[in-house]
Image 1: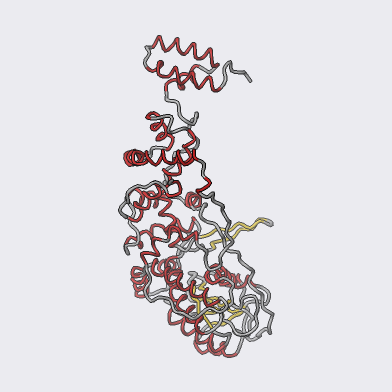
Image 2: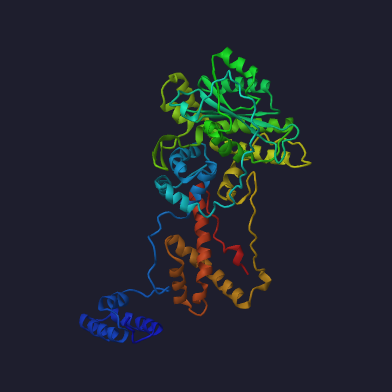
Length: 515
């Protein structure tokens, strides 16, 4: 590698000195300057022309990476939409964004500026996951679903495996019980009866105070009245609460096909087992739930959740599988909500489809999500030892809930995760130089805000160069990181104004750096 005749610092000084003379010189004078500069530095002549023809940046090099298209306002809007969709993945959220934005704007929960709205609607799933990667922390630690003991096989009930479903019409459902016994199965505790439709993924959940065949029959009657389609068949596991003469007689009397899964083959009920973990356990965790008051709270929670999940939660559906040796390739349909699958399918009367469309327009996803969060908090209180029975408020503060969506990810969910402790240096330990530098930036902050309002894309490095041009002694290069943090906080505040349509408060210096 060829060694350069001058050091890096010397070359920088030459560029700083020669660039002004180079810009005001004639063509012949520029040629002589280039000859001297190339001889001193060893640069290629074309590279020397580029260096002397442009201003010297503070960083000493060109910026890396592609220009940023999605700024803080888009990220703020994505956080709200991600929370409003109950934290689904980027591929599912991409499909839901146009629908959810329309609902939130229709109900007055969101007011996106036109440029921000266009960017939010055009964002791709990979960008959604990248922009939300920093806030997807504290993932729930899930435990395996406890396995029950094998019971007697009811020979009068036929066996149905996963491969036997084919492509059924809406109304063919899998049924399972989710136990909320916590660390022990002793005593009486609440169970959740989960029913999942094979064709559409429509899911209903019912809270049962105890595990009883009579309660399950009543719960099935209640669910049948709520479903927009008739029940044609149910498939259960081998538990005694479902494999009994009471439920068998009920299904035969109503003309419902009654089948069971094979013992020790949980994949025979893969549809409902997936909903047990993705819906029920995600809502309630693995705490022990017992008592009538908790059952009432779960009833209110499931009443809101059934509408939110079936109308506003897209899900994937397996289309086909290809096996090549030991490798299995799966292909999925585009994500869709259960309601959309019902409306797009055949066999449902037009009057029922019209009622579904009208019902979807009347629902408010934010109000439903607020009711779900209240139910989760109330269930958490009742599941704690010694908790007093209390009722959630009848009216929710939707505005406060909406404003908190952008920072709700910082709070623990139904099953809190361990947080990392971050130590912050007390202000009393600041050195005099650090305090003086903070005061310098504080005095120049009004001027900085004027520059940012006139040129929102202006970088912190450019602002610092302007400050140094006025007074280089008060604004050294070491202030760049603090200034970058202040500019970032200003842009976040501006982004919230663009997302929520709130009036911008007078710009203030960030509290973390005030003297």
